[in-house]
Length: 281
Length: 355
Ligand SMILES: Nc1ncnc2c1ncn2[C@@H]1O[C@H](COP(=O)(O)OP(=O)(O)OP(=O)(O)O)[C@@H](O)[C@H]1O
Ligand SMILES: [Mg+2]
Image (cartoon, rainbow over all chains, first blue to last red; front, side):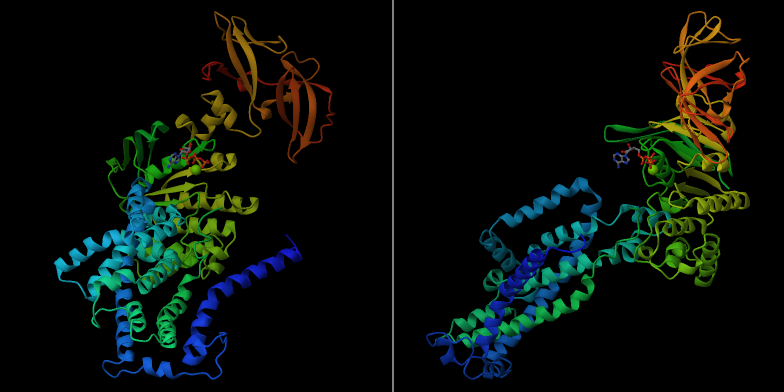
């Protein structure tokens, strides 16, 4: 098509704008709440922009004095970063070989569907057995324990994602590498994994975000600063005598920063289109 | 320099039988061309020789040793894939040198070898590029380079020149021939191009539906095709196939009832096919008895020859005649041929009948 219909172009832009609005509006409101005074937040009618911006809560929450809100949030932030990272790395270590194997051996594809079928079970159903298992291993309220639980949630998802990422990589490349004398590890390291890098990056990003946002298991399996994650810490803020919505919003903004930074870093890996040009057609 | 033997090799994918008892025996330094229609199993044979597929039954031997269980990387075979199979994330230089790199050849030596091959293939100016930045023909030459840079026991080429323009194809063909003379490596080569097959091969195997119909020197294949299929498949334009009856007195053409006297005959009349190559047909003098009458549909000058499309009754008849003849559509012509250029096949089995 040489020229797109003007109406269609406008329609596309409107859709894109609506989508952006839907995604960004809650975050924008979160940010506005975090810098509004309590009065502005409870006044009726609602103020959409504070009379006077109030940044004090950011100071409160980045304060490391023991037993303060700030110390609790910061340690939870640290826990979350570590737990999500461990779970993500472990999930990739499991699912890169698994995804490749399933992609290259369609005959065992059913096993992946079986594993993904476990997603149909509600987390509540798994909570008790998982709790008893962790308790038996003495891993309740540990970062590793929670990371292992997350691994069971993440690995099926990342395996499935990576399998669909390996699928379009032509098998002739592996055959050519074999004839060229490459060992399995060389073939994977030099040819296949670089070609799958965009999907691996996507899988890492999604795994990290899923682990970061998880609340239910974290609430059940952690109890104090040693393993408590940021989602639970934010909930704790709401559980006090009087809920300070501004404070909760500020914690939300702070909690959103690490994944955003991670996402920006990963974005460089997500450039796709690297697989073109190798085979005919 | 190695011999290659395929002994009773067959291959099935599930219930579909793709190869049915293939027997090939190549002496060291032979150049075997596999010819056959699309889907007849040529690439499958290549993959089995390379070790990328295991045969359902049968044995593959290199230098007399069974290699069925040997991993592809230890077979010392270089292959040009029909799909090229270039590594998209590596530069042309690294693509070509990958086999050497994996075999631990030092870098400077590798670079020299890559450059040498790249010069031959006229891609030495593109060594720094990625495959995506090349044209189809350039990619194909990189794929050839990846095989040529090594000195394997056996080369497998799966339609290596299919994407090149006519001039380049001819140059590369000559280059491959020269290299084969120089290196003397055993080659198995798949092509759809008749000229490539005739000029490169020491032997040609014509395949049909997973079987080898005939294997022989280019001359044998062309002059004495073993089956009607081989006769029609090899040669361009293809051989004319005329239905006839073989009886005690020779041939009787079914369309016209015209007779061709033969020294051989059949006691009981037998349905056969008379095969005549277009290039073996000539315009007959009025006095010539031994000729087939035909009505011209049209004539196509191709440069060196004039291809005449005609009909003998309902049977299409194509003749390659000298250029500059004036042959008008709908005119009547008579085409003659020499007895030694007749090919006769049994109509039911398609097998050649010795004349
Ligand atoms: N993995 C497979 N599973 C099932 N059938 C297959 C498989 N690979 C090839 N075939 C079938 O085997 C037959 C031979 O395929 P092959 O690729 O060897 O043909 P070819 O002679 O190389 O054809 P072309 O000239 O088109 O390259 C085809 O009918 C194809 O459909
Ligand atoms: Mg093929």
